[in-house]
Length: 196
Figure 1 (cartoon, rainbow, N blue to C red):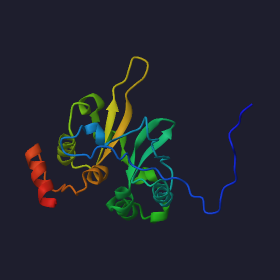
Figure 2 (cartoon, one colour):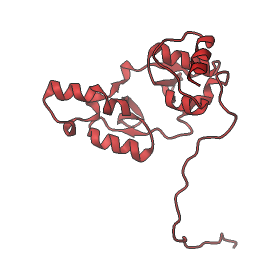
Figure 3 (cartoon, rainbow, N blue to C red):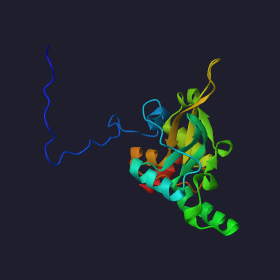
Figure 4 (tube, rainbow, N blue to C red):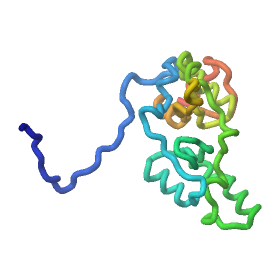
């Protein structure tokens, strides 16, 4: 029987790091799916709602992400927590209101519950471009959008993907100003040109 050749690891062997797909460069006219993290291809980074914030920060660092899905039952989502939630005013508000220390706070204290999150439909996204995604992020004033795939008679709707402003900026190669609401392609183009 033929077998594969085995060998022992040489000193200094490292682990391969995931690299973003280096395909066609993304532009404002690119299909919107080009900036979506597809959760059928990339495993969602999750955390339990009773996890201390200090541990949540370490989880983000170790997994190289700025957003975690908050999950109390397998595959069912309670909400999201972002690095902004960990460092922003939410922890300070909880500390002031409850008289606790930061180390005592857990994810559930500062996360964005599911009912407060903005989502877009996967089918609608399939017919949109990156400019429309940016306009939507600006309109709702968010740095992330969830992409929802409609349910079937046997299965309810599910979170199919995440769109992150930071990822769009990386793929476009330039920052996107979020201060004003841009309603059309021309306004977005002008704001990107001004930022360049």
